[in-house]
Length: 372
Image (cartoon, rainbow, N blue to C red; front, side):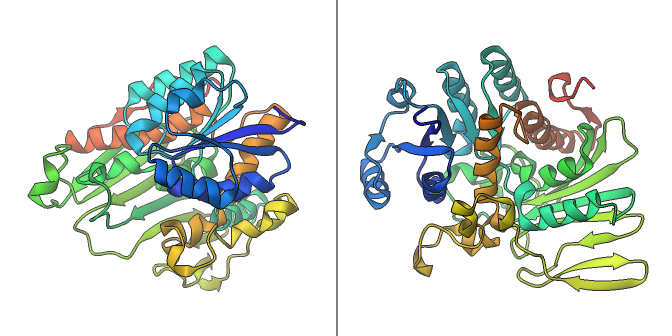
């Protein structure tokens, strides 16, 4: 740490580059280093943002004693290994979703956090989107009454994405729809039951052995009368990109727009009302408020896909950075912490297992549940 600022290193400079200027302006951060195997990309990004410390080897980065935080934005199969290595090297970890690809990997990360006393946060965008913050505010003010049911979906056509996405089981990347229902319920997922439906192209099935076009999962929450349903699709399903959640309360209900960029709807009895979701930049330090509505690049042709699809993850990027840095600064747990991240991630992993077993009810492992 330098001058009461945490030295941050970002690994993976595709989506990861979106976070560089946010760290550069945040009052608790020093944007210290970047890491990318491709030297051309590494130098392009380093030159663009004026970052001198550059690594093409992750192990060299881990050995740098000046690094306090590693923010991981690499392909999903690398998340667990790199997170564990960073924690073992004495670094706090922020990692893009999902936390890991297996239940065992999630357990190892939770154990590494306990053993090292360091901080881990899965950077789940939807729980810091303006839509979620709007609904959370309504609920915490008592306007929605008692929560009765939660529903979320993440439907996206992944054809043409990098090879490791091809044929991926839909629920293996479910945090964008599991995250908001778990976060709003303020409860742990206790058990799941999931059904697969339809069939993707035969050439996509062989990589992961997953045949389903759509997977739909019911979640029962621990110590609660509340349940939720989440739906995912990745291939061969005709649907515009949509990350969404619906919340049904005794006094007021919220339904996400069916078509991107249209207005969501609030129901109070028989009277529906379209609502324009406000921005929540006012919750952030002034230095990073502009990043709720704009990305890194000015030219439309260079905008990251997160701003072309999904409106920049609902303005969540600076909120994620602020939550992680503020938690470290204030010596508290971020949301979601390691255990909560494991609960959210394992819902999707076990949901797919359930679908492959015809909807069998599967319980979340103990290490993902709160002791209280």
